[in-house]
Amino acid sequence: MDRIRARTLKPYEGQKLQRMKHQLTNAVNSRHARVILLSRGGGSNRQIADRCGCTPTWVRAILHRFNVGGIEAIGWYPYYCGRAGPRKFLADIREQICEVALSPPKELIGLSVWSLAKLREYLVAQRLIGKISLESLRQILRQGKIRWRRTKTWKDSTDPEFWPKYRRIRRLYANRPEGGRRLSVDEFGPLNLLPRHGRHYARTKHVQRLRATYNRHGGVRHMFGVYDLERDTLLGTFATHKNWMTFLAFLKWLRGRYPRREILHIVLDNATFHHQAEVRLYASTHRIRFYWTATNASWMNRIECHFTALKKFALDNTDYRSHAQQQAALESYLAWRNRSRDISLKNWKSYRRTHKKVA
Image 1 (cartoon, rainbow, N blue to C red):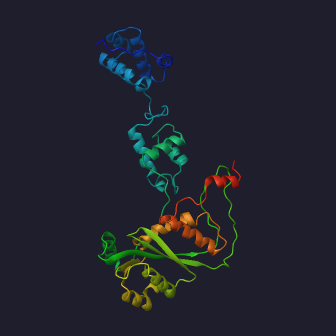
Image 2 (image 1 turned 45 degrees about the vertical axis):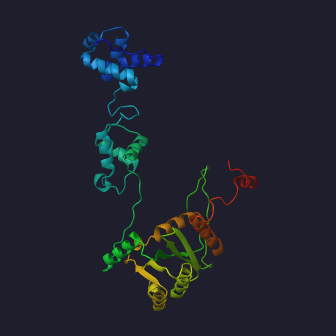
Image 3 (image 1 turned 120 degrees about the vertical axis):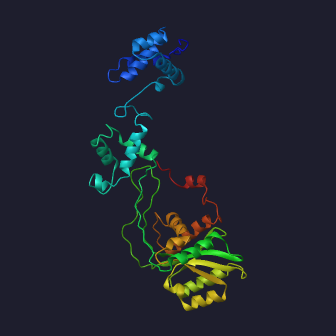
């Protein structure tokens, strides 16, 4: 029974155990510290148990924990006054905090949204916790996989043929037709010449400034885009107008990019000019088949998600003064996206020689 002894103490451990021994607000830590110090003083485990008011089995357990994990292994703190660390809030308290954060604030506090400060105030008022820092609260929510997210709008499709169209497109995405090519087509735009806000890295407090006033005298452009599911490429052509004539010209350009023996299976939306008689006639005579997305269900078209990245990396945080500059930026992104160019456009060392170093 007495073979288990506390190991040799390090200098700082002896000082900390003496402080823990005299804690008046934490009887558990005080008892654990006395067990370790009495063991180092030569007392037997049974004698230590009698003096500390516990069993010899518990004394051996405390000594085992100290020998393996040090003082951290024998420390105990209640959730409402603990140190920073994994024992500050137990699992059930953390789960309640996450549950409150996911509950509607309108019913609990009469406000439309939570903030960390208001969530903390509500938790304290409800006596779920005693006190907590905003950073600790944020970390608990993060560990519970609760993030701050923007709400999104959703529009249900009212198309009476929604399910037949949905299943037809899903079957196309799931299996490539024999001797065919799967393509997603849509229009990106209108592309105006105006400043677009975005994000960028900055060391100073001042962000990059964009002009607030502009005119629309430069007109607009439209990009007819196509996403090739087989090659995983995104291409496009530009036009000043969006109508059946420019769309027919785009179809002819697209048909010329693929062998005549291949059937082009094209997913596209229900824009009026897509249904023009001349467009349908050209498609039927040139081995092109259309797959129409349902009304208000553009998410069926896989090119949509690629347009999101195109807008972010080619248009956000820009202020193009001509359509030629804007088109060049879009084509530069498409070239990188299709692995036609490397990420580097300019050598870093030559760039540093010609630009002042930002402090």
